[in-house]
Length: 191
Image (cartoon, rainbow, N blue to C red; front, side):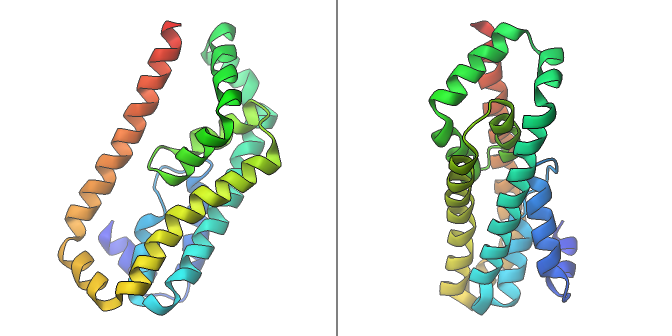
């Protein structure tokens, strides 16, 4: 992972790769764009907020694509996988907490793509979905970009010295996010 991100961060195409990965991660791809965002920002800390903007934009557009996937084809797939009563229970809770659910998934390591597809599946207001996604994803990525811009070379030294530790922590956070989804799914099935 480290070699891959460093290689992309040192090419003129890194910003395009960041947009594509952010887009894909929000709708179907399991690898978060944070690694590449950090690598690009460390190579050029002065424009790390630009990278955060690119990452946010790609992620929100990818979220919109995930929403469309759920809106156009999610219901038949969901009905094949789950009983209709269970889908209706999740639908009820998703609509009750829609903005919070989308924001929390957008800001944290919880798999955002599950919520983008669910947003379309459960017909969440599209404008609200975009606004909340932008706030959540933007908050997440601009914090990273802002910290790197603020601390520059010091951030570079800390991250380089502890890259493996940060990678392990990020992977553990992703696993915790997937486990949280599994727990929620299990809880809903019991009802």
